[in-house]
Length: 256
Ligand SMILES: NC(=O)c1ccc[n+]([C@@H]2O[C@H](COP(=O)([O-])OP(=O)(O)OC[C@H]3O[C@@H](n4cnc5c(N)ncnc54)[C@H](O)[C@@H]3O)[C@@H](O)[C@H]2O)c1
Image 1 (cartoon, rainbow, N blue to C red):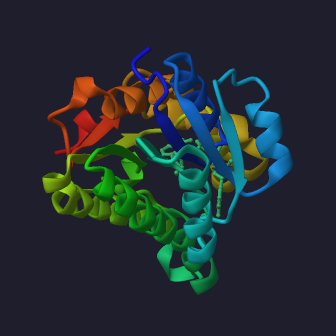
Image 2 (image 1 turned 30 degrees about the horizontal axis):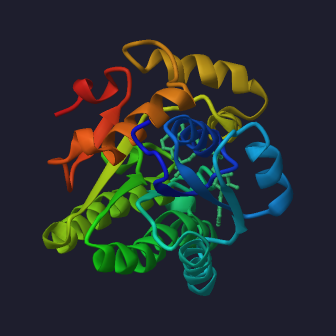
């Protein structure tokens, strides 16, 4: 029970990685604050999560006031925030840069980068006062590598890696650690959307091609990502900060 009575705040909680992380922290004794866009899918997703306490909060992470509100409500309910999983994200539409639109770029940046920034802004203020805390930002291998058609997503996740490093440096004196995970394809709704974006009706073909690009020849499971998130949030990672962790079946080893 590494997280007995610890307060863990997770955004994008109704999605694949969010649900797996919520379950993994609940198994370790955590109390949860869970944020997603809409109440009904969030309730449905969290029904199977057996935690000591579950606070369900709706917010659009791209809107600063809504982020401020979910952080304040968590603090009001639990009195503190020990762990923050800054995880909500969208993939956006596939378009090469020459066809890329301002709208798509802004939408993806609004959620992935501004959403992550707002979350850090308000949660770190609380952790700084506590002089304790751990943050895990969900970046992506798209935060480390290019991907044709995904300029908005790739740029937004590169920005998350930059935020991650800077936040870690700013919080180093306050006992707060900040790290990121950088997964390759994970078997969640997001990959279904990416497969459809890439190949339309031939989504199954896209899946085979994406999986074949991974040396271990498959997507990650959401549970595998959750295990790394839990480790980075735990005392076992007490000297790890400002780092990002590839979790990609060997894919990162194919580049410098
Ligand atoms: N699935 C993958 O292949 C993969 C790979 C690398 C990184 N990631 C990252 O992991 C994170 C989680 O993705 P996932 O695979 O669980 O996808 P998912 O689509 O299953 O979950 C994403 C969740 O974020 C929520 N969300 C989206 N926009 C939001 C907003 N504006 N405000 C609040 N919540 C919002 C969605 O409602 C959804 O529940 C994302 O940041 C994603 O970019 C995913």
